[in-house]
Image (cartoon, rainbow, N blue to C red; front, top):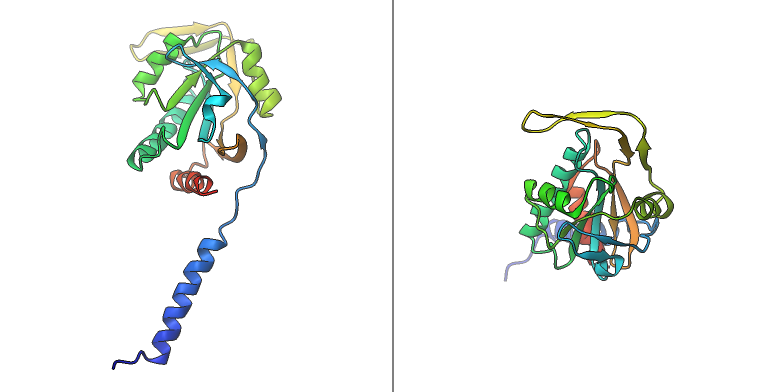
Amino acid sequence: MYRWPLAGVMILFITVLSAACSSSNKAELPVYGEIPAFSLTDQNGQTFAKDGMQDMVVLANFIFTNCTAICPTLTSRMAQIQAKLEDSALLGNAVILLSFSVDPEHDTPEILLSYAEQHGVNHSAWRFLTGSPETIKQIITDGLKLGYGQINETNKHTHEDGSLHIHEYDVFHTNRVILGDREGRVRAYYDGGTDWDTRKIISDIEQLLTE
């Protein structure tokens, strides 16, 4: 009968023990607060409320369709997450994506639908949400304590067809992306502009799904 050398047995034991410790010692994501209750309209003209997130992990950002600065980056990075979640069959089944418009006076459901289609959005699992300016403010600033507002400055930007579009105001808003758990609590913040790690975000989502 073959007998394992003692050194080999010790190496195997240490390897198994290290793997177990690594798995069990993974830091639990903190709880930062509650995602406030809301009821808004999505790009399909359907009402979407916080109740629609029940038992789902949610990743949410804040954008507006006329934004030419950070918003295209925020949307493309959410699209990366969408693709990863689709590959693992989690999108729509266990995880949903939300994009709150910070320019609700302009971003009607029809405009949000056009914007979503330009970015290859899965409409049933990635909702673009709009509502009254007062409601949006209550969600973002009063509820989530994140920056958002209008500036009385003319905003000029060029459309893809080369035409110049001029707005009588501009919008400032947070670059943060929030991760919420299945109980509607904020569990992580990510900087959607600079410090973006798709693998870390997917790992955090998977961790919340095991809780």
